[in-house]
Image (tube, rainbow, N blue to C red):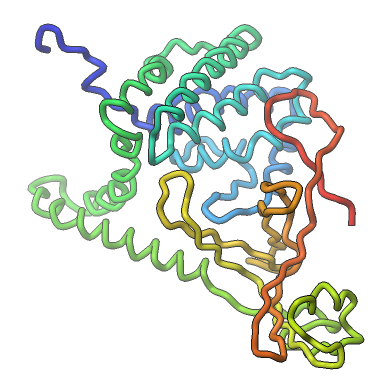
Length: 357
């Protein structure tokens, strides 16, 4: 190394190996899993995980404590789902709950595709919180955090300033086609396979692109539901069948004796500008009593007069075809509200409850 050079300048922050399958996948999660198994809490934790609501892009892992080895994405999906499944299982003021919460927040900040000065300052704060949480785990369970990937976290800010965001240093992109190339290599005699490797890499990339396209086609499939004998797709409702006609017809000049066609829907596509990277983005929200053989009623944030970030759960979505030819899209939302209930281990995670039906 040249005189005066800094070794850390040659190293970026690889989110996959340093965090997903590093600090979390090979250190904190195995320690937590061992504790759950020792205290005979693993079965209850797995039950909680199996009931965790599904969400697009989140891998559902019903029995994570039975997994001995997996990829980094599976580990990070377990992290995203763990906190609400753990908080009432573990004793009060559990260091496991605290470190899972701070690692949730830390993973979000480390994975942002755009970095600003404000975000870097917040990252520094989270690093300090993580150091405190890992210290608590060391004191109570003698978990040793003296390893290189733990130390690299303190250099993450410097790496982002000099090299950009973590996606510029992430090896996750290569992991997918490495598996495909490995399968092809196993079919060779291990000699003179360089030319084959040159062909297999683009083939693996093409296969990944096709698989992703097929996944999106399946996920975007939209059909209209059969709600039940009293309300089905395309049903025409007269005024007597509309309980809150004033709400539905206000401002549209509709006489109550006119017919309104109600079209029930299972999915809504929301196109918007992301506040993360300011690019166009799309959310797919589902309200389906039987999505892949399981109920799927997504939670949403919506704007109200009193709260610009109100939260609730979709209950029913429909499109009203008005006599004038106009279309009115409406949704029934079961709101969340603040609660006096407190978990055994309190963190800065906001807690709300559903309003009773």
